[in-house]
Length: 156
Image (cartoon, rainbow, N blue to C red; front, top):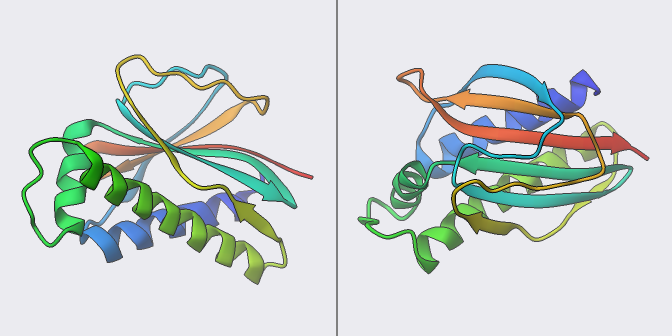
């Protein structure tokens, strides 16, 4: 996988978390996997088309998703991960991938993104044709892994 592409994803994720949720994330881990099972129980899937195609999955635990949604909504308490906080998390992911598309355009690579699909549950898995998947683990200020970004892409 192209290292320049990966750096664009890292930049977009960290910038958007900082701007929308006042949260500083850093890369904590990088791994490659062929499987599709997810440990975290909130997943947002976005497809990529154009000169690079595939899918991106952002995953986090529901408690962290509620915390981030609350920050995005100016501190409004989020006790239940219902329609409003789900919409906030989808929008934040959409903003990340929109930023990715803009960054790709700056290096003369044209991509389009699909609308985000949010899924919740235990033991979720997603199957796609592009393997292996690069998994970037993002940590919060305490060093805890709070967000994973799964990148399954290829040049067309």
